[in-house]
Amino acid sequence: MTLTTDFEITVVDYPAKHLAGFHTQTTIPAISYDCLPLWQKFYSETQKLPGWKRKKTYGLFVKTNQYVSLDFWTASEITAGISVPEGMDVFELLAGKFVRCLIPMASDILMAYHTVYSTWIQSQINYDIDMNSACFELYPPKWTPNDALDLYVPLKTKEPVTRLNTELLNAELNTGR
Image (tube, rainbow, N blue to C red; front, top):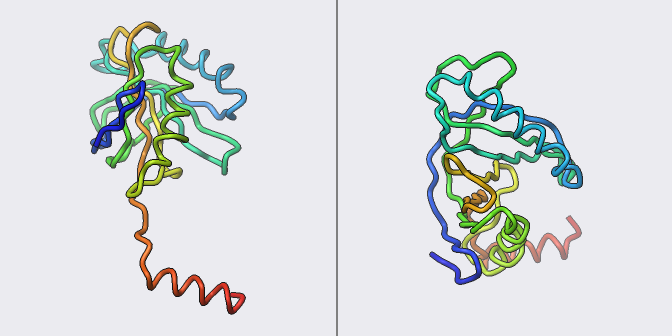
């Protein structure tokens, strides 16, 4: 399923990944201040990861408090079970259905988020955004701000609205429950 916009948007199944990296607690207004130092730390320390040679990197956002705080991660894929250097943590990215948005370059990131979270999701009858799973940006090896990257937003299947569901909801509303 593809939506025609300025971005290439598709629904995909993404496999589980074992990641290692650094994370920090942040808020939406503070993201730009908190994330840059974490990326710098990540790139200076990732050479310590066994087998790391400029692999794809992940920028993950995990909601920790209802629309207030996020746990932001900079990470790279690792082999399950290996030990990671001191100061790094492991993150298990669960397999699932995601909307994938191809972003032409870094200057388009905010518009891509707006497109997926506002415009695209409103056009969907089968999917909602899964606010309890990690959203992530995936950067190819040797990425620069003029290169493309992918945004992955987790999805869940919408509950079908049936006549029985509607009748039960109306009955609850009428009885004041």
